[in-house]
Image: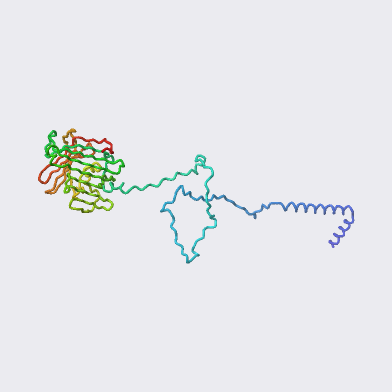
Length: 372
């Protein structure tokens, strides 16, 4: 009933022109507002809690270490694992993100070090240590102290006596001259000794010539050839050749040749006296020495320090004596303490008691090594 009255009321109002126009206006206005509001709403950003948040972080890539700054040593290099070719599935493929290395070309213009940032300056590569020669450690291995400044040239003059008298002005029976020199190469040496008789004895006694030639190593003299020649007598001529590479010593006399084993540090009758200039005495008092005819062990003992009288004046010396067996020649040396242990007095006593003594009269150490 109420619905019928409501529709009758609306129908009567609709028939009224003023109400009809008002209804048209209201309907048109509503449609227009709905259209405009709906269109504007399409462009709104949804700020509800259901929105999604996108997060982004900047991550610096890991820089590979420069090989020039810290090269890998042999110990740091990773071990290469053997690959079983029968099972290809075990072979690891390289990561996808690693790109194929490309050849780096040099820049057209060199870059000054001052233009580089501080953190990009490259430390200069350290030079590899050069391995020292084995001989450089030889003296340390055998426990010797080496004199680093031996004389390059020594010329010694001696008076020769046949007695043990200590009078300086007594008449000598002969003279001797010894010359030691290191050759210009700095790697070789040469020693020459010549003893001559004086007066009527010179008519009967021939000259005695001895020479020693060889090389210098880290512990002093290393003989290569030695000659002992007493006049022109073949039976009094001896030679010794040192083959250090094969460690053999060849001794040649009138009777023939014999080969012996060559031990480290072996000397001849001349070189051993000047070897003390390189290795001071009291360090090695047992020396293998050859006279060209045989090879023997010379045991020396320290007899003390002595002040000897010479034509040069008094000299402070170190007295050494060979402990010879009964029936063998005794050898004594006096080495000058103020002249780097150069021999200034030499004495030999035969088994029958006969004495030969050389006493220095002059000593020079400043002549050129090339002088003869």
